[in-house]
Image 1 (cartoon, rainbow, N blue to C red):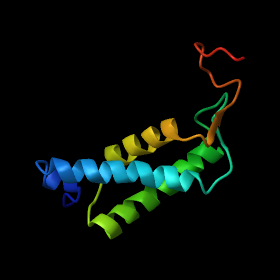
Image 2: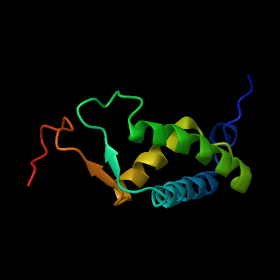
Image 3: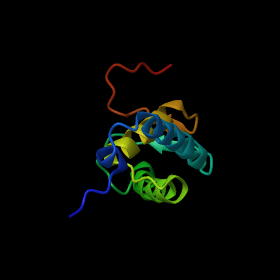
Length: 108
């Protein structure tokens, strides 16, 4: 199997990698706006049918296609994952269930 990831093929093109990663984050934030508020997983974060987990899978695939089409760039799974979760952290579209398993979180 041939290596396709642009980061691996041209690791020294740091400005391009950073530009694509920043654009991926913006891409994800824009896609989140297409949805009503999204509940983050509750008691069972491994429920693969939960809306958040289904959204993740769909947006990962779409983001990879977007990069190839718009940038002629094949992002690594790690680049996609990092950009996705950075976008989740900066988006106001996500709400957490009360029972989300975070022992350090205090509910108001």
